[in-house]
Length: 240
View 1: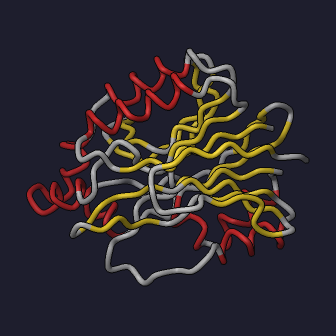
View 2 (view 1 turned 180 degrees about the horizontal axis):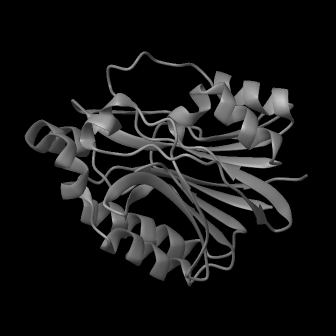
View 3 (view 1 turned 45 degrees about the vertical axis):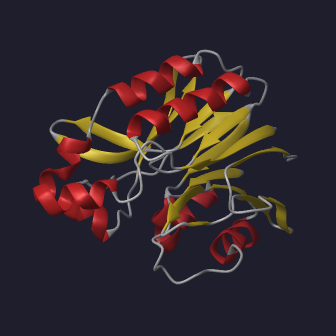
């Protein structure tokens, strides 16, 4: 399986971030799977600023259907699957942090983040309830979004039913304690015999770039890792 990982840098606006994502799709059509990070469209601090102003109506103000529409349109150009990071989904007047899996403009699967963090709850995001698995090129795949990997019950359910797990993560806060390596992903891979595809995002704060390196981890350890905390594109061939 040829997997393309888009370690995207925040461009500072929703419009520019979506444009960047669609450009990745246009330029990398020959992979089996193309992956975006969590909340790839939203700039650093976007939800936090809206929450300070609108409280739990922040997610309502942040929601725009055109983000998904643009990505769906772009996915028609791909030969393979698009793991579309995550966007804000509106359903029955509730809002979710949702990862869509797309192929040829069609929604193959979607997963709503279960272990939403305090910042998301304050913004008005509703936790999902169910894990999701689907087939990619005949391989059973699962999805977790960022903090989902901190909940053992979620990890167990997803990893026990998958051979490959896609893990879009968002930008860490600049004051977040620095984590060296990929301890949780390595533990998941070794404990459950899965391959973890971790898709990160980069931003700039106080003139310095920060973020976590994207990586592919299997039971033997780190198979591939971004060589720097910069915008970069990785193609990794994964065997099962």
